[in-house]
Image (cartoon, rainbow, N blue to C red; front, side, top):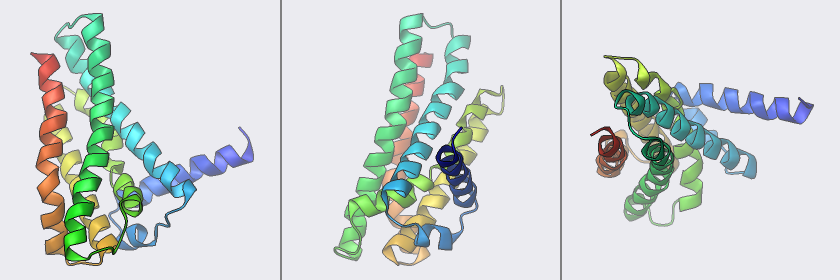
Length: 185
């Protein structure tokens, strides 16, 4: 592994660790550069793959066919990634009502991508009996991280940040959860 690859790996791990702490300064100070956008997207993609892996166990228990299994895994990954973009879009549109032209959609993608850090542990949902509670805890943890990111990004109060984030969050949870239910029944 070359030096550049090690630095990128270190940057990913450091960013992941910082994002998990819900440190407001981390979310506020995150620059919108090509490198941070890449790290944010990587976190979202790893979170989506982790979600799919967690659901793979459920699919195997339900003995779905190979075609349905592969299709479900791909759909799980896509639903998490599209959910990220949709949630960021709803936050941006609602936030623009409070502070017009304060931040762009592109500028919100980085901190909200970082806020998906808890979702990297979604593969733990394969643990029998506690998978669903783990999934719920990780979803709430991500919600809290997004609230911190939005509060810092839009420079608004905790209450308004929570309201803005909570408008799109249930829709994302329903959409992603529907994919799982569709293939387990």
